[in-house]
Image 1 (spheres, rainbow, N blue to C red):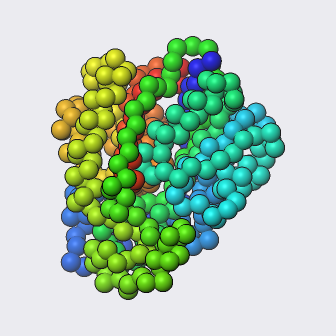
Image 2: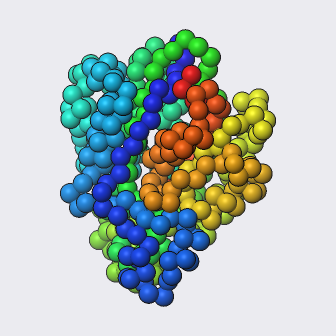
Amino acid sequence: MTATIAEVDYHCPESRLTNEDLVKEFPDWTIDKINAKTGIQSRCIARPSECSSDLAVAAAQKLIARTGCDPQSIDFVLLCTQSPDYFLPTTACLVQERLGLPTTCGALDFNLGCSGYVYGLGLAKGLIETGQARRVLFLTAETYSKFIEHDDRSVRTIFGDAAAATLIEAGTGQEAIGPFVYGTDGSGAENLIVKSGGMRGQVAVEHATVSNGNGNGHGKKIKLYMNGPEIFTFTLQSVPQCVSRLLDVGKVRAEDIDLFVFHQANKFMLEHLRKKIGIPDDRFFVGMENIGNTVSASIPIALRQAEDAGKLTKGQLVALVGFGVGYSWGATLVRWKV
């Protein structure tokens, strides 16, 4: 058996944070400046009571309605999130019950950020091609906005909340997902981190400092901290090498790839990567303008957008590249919906 992507859909919260909203709060910024740096005009933001499971269920319901898939036919649920509803139980278990999936269905969460979609495809492929499942529901759901301090404009301009659902099925044709390349460098963990929440954070939060409001204080242990320049440097070093490894392992040339879909980090970073790697603009998809950086959900959302825009059609070869928090990165090739 071979694993193949059957369908992708996504869900975004109704609430939005626009550049106009941000400029009202930070009048020394301009709308044009935010647009130029991020390529984002508005971001989807979850309501205070809206959590990752809510977004994941909504995305899955859209997928089920689009495909006509019988929920009872799902053998396994994979849920990638760094903002789970609870420490325990596993959010995937909550989703299983709410979607009415069979109790014979496996379900697990895994904690990974911007590379999570690539890793999840690898896990789903393994489940299917070893005979453990025939139909996998792979969900990516994030509510990063709940980690962000209101006065930290460095990250409020970038991140949005969303969930995506991917149906991966067993087939008998050519390999449609893979090969994969992965990478990890935990020495960069401190550069994108939420220090409170985990067991080590229970100690750290007791000594957390008050925010100075500029988004640069490394003492901000109770919310998301991002060292933008270090993340940018890591990305420019690791991603081109990752793409080169993928082409070597996959025994393909860059010109054989019909579309490159990278993690939708921000416009400034993506343009630097595209030019450094030498990818033509017409084979490089960016679709974050009205959604924002949705972390692990960004790649599947971009795939859905690309297909809706007619830039991705059945049988085309797509290179998917995820990179970010961890540091973690990964890439794979996908033959679209074969």
